Amino acid sequence: MAESIAFSKAASREQIYAEITPQIDALIAGESDLIANLANVAAVLEEAFSFFWVGFYLKKGDQLVLGPFQGPLACTRINFDEGVCGHAYSSLKTVVVPNVDEFPGHIACSSASKSEIVVPMFDTAGKAAGVLDVDSDRLDDFSETDRLGLERIVHLLKGHLTA
Image 1 (tube, rainbow, N blue to C red):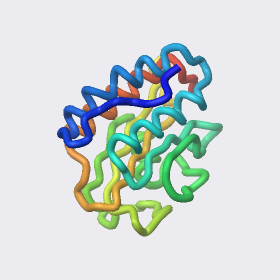
Image 2 (cartoon, rainbow, N blue to C red):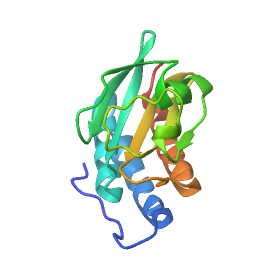
Image 3 (cartoon, rainbow, N blue to C red):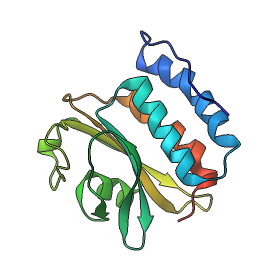
């Protein structure tokens, strides 16, 4: 059981993703509880990058329901056809939003959120099971590096998810 992660704080985001991804893999490999794993992944991402908000929404019935997260109070339920999370879940594609005020139908859980990236999560059968949602309090804070890094991390969770 890991109690801390190690990464180069002054490194590029690409390097930090490279350093934390195998540690996340090792962290969740021995734990079967989904909530525990999601909580630890959210904590690692927040610690490594100091994101404004990082967390998970899981498919429950016909909505996405708030799961483990790090950051301020969040929206509890999101419909599949609402906001960036609903769009990523429904389109089955990662969505990067440089300026949330320019995204039609953006759900403002916090007015401090300025940019966002949402990565859909899939179960072992390939069905959508939820999303990883990361918000920044800076405009245009997410790049291709973040998309690739977060998609790799979400892929590690695949064996723990059920749709």
